Image 1 (cartoon, protein in one colour):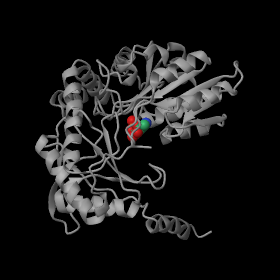
Image 2 (cartoon, protein in one colour; image 1 turned 90 degrees about the vertical axis):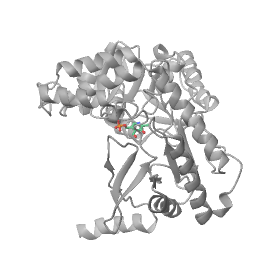
Image 3 (cartoon, helix red, strand yellow; image 1 turned 60 degrees about the horizontal axis):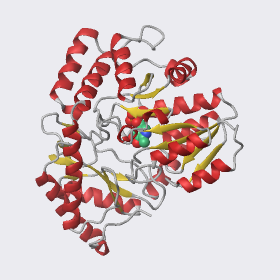
Image 4 (cartoon, helix red, strand yellow; image 1 turned 135 degrees about the vertical axis):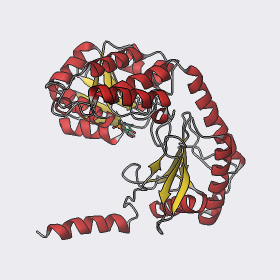
Length: 411
Ligand SMILES: Cc1ncc(COP(=O)(O)O)c(C=O)c1O
């Protein structure tokens, strides 16, 4: 085999169908966030506003979080130097897990390098521990959950996105004593749809299922204490395992699950992606604790953020920029073609200083390519106005037919 040709052919196919990924080098500025600097193709330094960061509450640039990081880094050094089992469990790790357990009103929590690994490890480990377990999975679940279920080799049944009628049909057809786990997200990262968590929890109880929810795009943002959608609906005790990230609403790095102590202990003891990897840097744990404390106690920040989301949508509507209607903070402008999506994004960046990374396959199914706009707590009304005007101007150039007064409704 000619290995070089093999790789080149695969890459060329991606380039031909418009799915090749180009990364923009973002020179991030803590001081000026969401403004940042980058170099254009001619090497000229330019600035732009970031409209695709998941640092929703701008916690990554919060002065107290940064100070905590440097303080703890000076005390504890940088790396932890070990897996959790072999000298890598510091007091910071323990304190962070306690903080997360309390946030989600659970007996325990378990840290991972990221929520991707938390999903992958937890789901694959549960499948291996209970070989007869059937996963019942929402069709729009994140790649990390899909990979976790696949790795377990257990049976999986997919229900239509957020469709509790379909979910019940599936549950009804399974034997009562069949072990089963409903796997879903609270806020879906691309469409911005929110799961009917209460209804799913009720079905789980009725049909004796375990439940697993990914709250990655909800933690910090929803609920009185920022505990996510399960907190907003007060159903923490009805969901068995809650997955979250420290990297989005909390602005740091790392992922976790929160659950009853026996589940936590099982994943801690059998989960390969937990056991065989160096633990998070202690200073990152300290920064995450600080960030959670700040966010947890600041319901005003959450309220203000949601008001800004409303304001952004009013401004987009005013400028006739079509977007998917959504109950959450995520705003999705459907484009439906990867090359067009890239051209629009590139035009926005170089012409208007608006950075929105185009989203295409495999992040979304083919034909659902889009621009995903995320607001942060630091975006101003003036920046929102400028965004809407630039979007309208750019859409006029590339898809003139997208001039509409109607918000596109996700179907
Ligand atoms: C729904 C969902 N789950 C999990 C993850 C992984 O999170 P992390 O970045 O902490 O690994 C992401 C990442 O974007 C996500 O969108």
